[in-house]
Image (cartoon, rainbow, N blue to C red; front, side):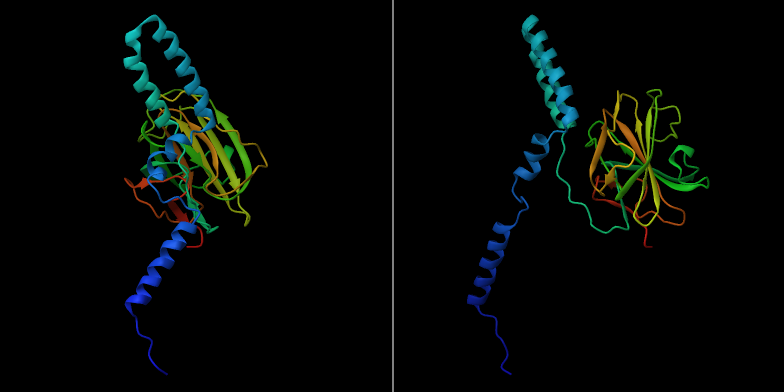
Amino acid sequence: MPKKTTTLKTLKKSEVSTQQSLKESHVDLSWKRYLVQPIVNIHKEGWKILGVMFAVAVLLGLIWDGFWCFSLPILAFGLYFFRNPERVSPTNENFILAPADGIVSNIKAVIPPKELDIGTDPLTRISIFMSVFSVHVNRVPVSGIVHKLNYRPGKFVSVQDKDSEDNERQEISVIMKNGTKIGFIQIAGLVARRIYCPLKLGDKLTAGQIFGLIRFGSRLDVFLPKGVEPKVIVGQTTIAGETVLADLEK
């Protein structure tokens, strides 16, 4: 059979085909994805806070003209803090995804809270610390049904590298299709004011789905099932709904 040769004309056709496929793609590859989209997409809880901040800024601005020099940067930071960028989650059902943007601050074996109902033996707990500059929208680490919910009020102390038993927290347990139970906890930090988690028992969740947020600095803990090894290390940066914390299959 005669060999096929690559010509300049063939290469040009290939380039045109590639450009057409990019144009037909539903994924936004423009600069707007990185600069405009994260700020325009604000979590609905954020709009409530921003509305109050704006009203206070207008009121104080009418009293003192110079206040706008301080209020405008604060409002701009509010938009930045409550940003909700789009995320694309892996579809592998065996993956446990990061529930938060931040840095892995701790990985160690601890006994999970009894309220999670995921056993009484020590399990590997991955802690993700969120600074005030992190995206604070939280995402579900695995697909499944909400099995347990437990809210505990508490103090506002640092959660960066402590067990933080005294902090306000929302404990959540999800049971997967294969019967595996995954527990994760929202923990309020030093300057946090309220944990937002509208989940209800029996809710059906999809991995990577938004389920809540914590305001102004906090932490998310995820408990891995017994025998499952983490795929992240301390100091690693995580992206909510995208970074794989562990693989149940392995």
